[in-house]
Amino acid sequence: MGEIFLLLSFYTYHATRVVAPLLGIYLVVWRWWLLATQHHGHWQKILTEILIVMAIALGGSGPMLHQLLSPAVADRFQTTSMLKDINLITQSNQCLVWAGETFWARFWCHRYWYLARAVIQNLTSHFNWDYLFFHGDYNPRHSIQFFGVFYPVEMLALAASLAAVSKNWHQHRCVWWFLCFWLVVGLLPASVTYGTPHLLRTLTVVPVGVIMTAVGWCEFLSWWQKWWRLWGVVGVVTVYLGMIFMWTFYYRAYYPRAFAREWQSGYREAMWELSLLQEHFPDLPVYITRSLGRPAYYYFYYRDIAPQQVQAVVAEQKYDQGEFLTYTPDQVSFGTGWLEQEQLFVLTPDEAASLPATPEATIINDTAGTAVLAVGHYAPVTAQEQENEI
Figure 1 (cartoon, rainbow, N blue to C red):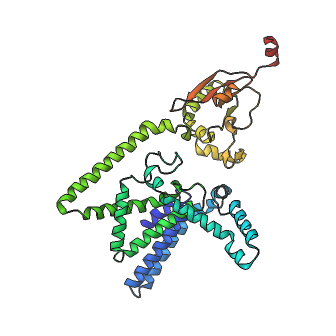
Figure 2 (cartoon, rainbow, N blue to C red):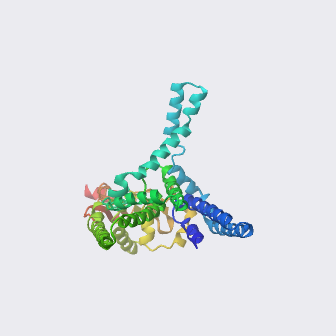
Figure 3 (cartoon, one colour):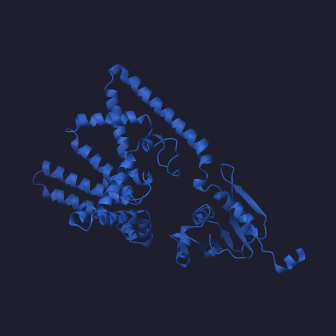
């Protein structure tokens, strides 16, 4: 079953497409080593297990391997990866100029050294105290900014877990080595990209922290006398309940207002208003601003447009880095193609106010009460109407 779940994780996020195969290879080698040392001569059994695992892995990962060769995935990798960062190459070239074109200069000034240093810096940035225990990922879409990846109290448990590892290293060294490998491999995908520390790209290593936290609490409570351990468990549970309450309160009461713009709050209400206008004006084109980011996906979702409908016309649409700029079945343009003609619109209030003929529009507020979108019907002023006004 473990192989099946590991294979399924391959389909969850970009980082797991690196982490899952490497962990799978490690586990297969580990399993092979255990069988080879404990069951001497049973090579047929060992080979059969390895072949079964390989067949499951190749058969299950086939669709995703095909998708990894698509232009969209390649474009995403080029956008986020720093493996070809021009700044690193520039620094390497400057080092060569200063040191001279000698053999040792070409060795020590090679861009791979600069790349290795950048990768190590990115990897170690995930061990920042503020990131781990106090604020988490600096992107508000990945963290509520009030807690880190772990609760602050878990610093005590993780410190105790290090004591447990040092005390039981030889007895459980295979497990500890596996957790160390998992930790390094799990941080590697984020370490070769920009914007670290990055929680989404390192979610695969959070279980390592959870395991070590559990080990740490067990080690911490083992230091207490037997009678006091029960009170220790009650204390730990009470602290966790308090932390969960604080996290939930902050998430429900403060976070939606403080970071409304990060989640494009207001799109749902705007799409509802737009649907009412489209019922009254079914033949008019629609223009939706991209100022809040990625309107196409909100349009498809809140208008209940099935993925099959979008996929049927995907080759006919215009794109910007994989993002829809048009959806021709509904005559919708996303941030491009504004024409001086009668049309429906979803704009920011400033964009709507700047139109030549100020239209009537419904103002949409986000969860913080800030006006973020205007939905309305635009009809340009004709020459005859301009003459009448004069």
